[in-house]
Image (tube, rainbow, N blue to C red):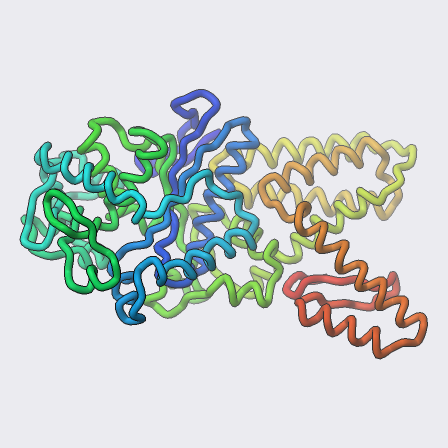
Length: 470
């Protein structure tokens, strides 16, 4: 398995420090508002990476942080007259519901920043003692001049560095424009919403970057196997994490850095709340099957390529989900005949190997799925001709099972849903046979209200979730 390592800008063979175990930290949400669709693309990237590591035989120990204290949270909490805990709780619930709807495997740990303040204070004290941090009028700052490797992740010319907007939020009185806040001394609004803690160097709250360094090393040790997030976090956030963590330990912070590219709107602008072009998952799931959204975000384009959000693209993903499910249904229901199908079985095995090789090559799910969709066309042609026997049937089901270990669109809760819906469809058909059209229409409308659309065809009634084309 090879991964593109942002630190070296090369594809590298992946091996964890401890044989058989991968320690992975992924930057999670700041729970101050809805997560936009671009955020979920990043979360699903690491769900895909996690699943493929498991397919490859590794046990994954994953940590995803919950940032529940920052400037925006404090501002909104004060405006609503609630504590930061009261303000963030519903946003975290919505975030977790979104992950569940998209079938993301849960991480082993979801630490909240506010639960690890003691560790952050200890880290700041250590950095002060080692000369990496200093006291200013408004807080404690990291002195980047004390860390010669600063800028190596983002490949920056330190002489030309400028603070970004998120850094500017941290700026107070400091030695250098590029220095960043480790600890902010308490202001009245912090006290008002419960966002201030006692520390030997002054009552206050942690800076954004400090939180991830502390929590990642608490759970995963001084050197991680994989750390990552969206490409927008590469600088300054991940660069600052390296400086803090290695400033304390003297050891490499993470061996691999993985970053996902932006999701963009139809005119090529990256999605961001400040640009007003955010597509929310909640709105999208009113129109499209969650499985279609999941496939669109993970398999339409490689994770290091930008992805445009279009209705056409989402419908296309829905069509791929339909074709995968339809083939699986045909194969499960098939009564194999004694036909010569060795060529099709060999073709299926070749597609399965090609799919796996694509995933091993920096998670190229888009390329791997393309090979599978070509196989589906061939398999349906053979099924229509009655040319699929037991050997090809098993080989094709094996391919679909491999694909679903990454996509997760064929089994589990969807199977239960299908059974429930089919029962309703059967009741409607019975009502129609009894000329009870009022009941039939009522059932059809109830299903439509749930986003389930029916189509009467010559072959019988077919149903689909809204957004997944027949």
